[in-house]
Length: 166
Image 1 (tube, helix red, strand yellow):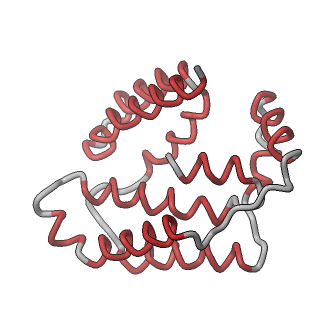
Image 2 (tube, rainbow, N blue to C red; image 1 turned 90 degrees about the horizontal axis):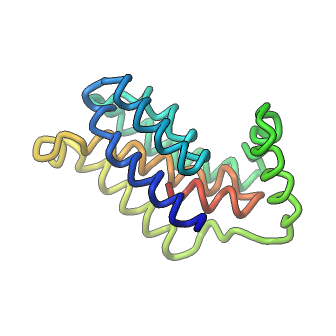
């Protein structure tokens, strides 16, 4: 049942992406709020509103990918952010995920490395594809951010995997 609720929330997010491009905050927020009624983790999609849909700094996003892996290699993690969110269910989930700390994320598995290579190739050819599909830049930015979440939250496997699959 949890997976169905998460799938509905993710589907609603996909319906909201054109409103990021159109800069229609009311419709975007309404759809994300409805998604949060299915699964409150959909709140993670709210900050994506601030992505600029029409401009792409290729080097910055490629560097973001590299920086996130560099941070993971020196054991810098952003997972502690969830411990300070003043929302009881989030703190309870964080505590239960930290209890499973003996699990390990392989940051260099074939699938993840393939995704990173594909992402870099997309950034290299973003100008070509952007002309054919107007939402490409915003989707590529979201994809890049989701790839960065695996190394940035790698110390807690459940959080890292769920965020990276958004």
